[in-house]
Image 1 (tube, helix red, strand yellow):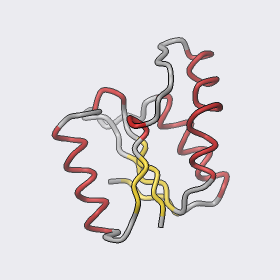
Image 2: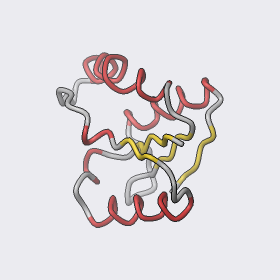
Image 3: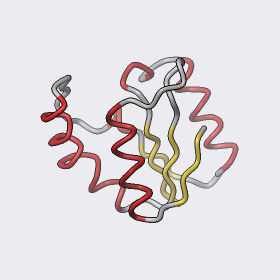
Length: 99
């Protein structure tokens, strides 16, 4: 089972990210987790560039996953990138789990 873990760039390499990954492993012990922080892609704060980066680097990977897990920011928001990834996962009909 392959799981894509969509979460904020600001949560990369934090305790929050570690705990959320632990939660995914608890739910799906035999899973392979794809963490977007491990995908080499340019960073951009420009929404047009961000959408291009999503389309080129992340969307094709989500297509090959079984489950889309995601988390909101500490303030309970979805970042632009996570929201777009989530919309695509919904379009594909993937199982979606908030962690």
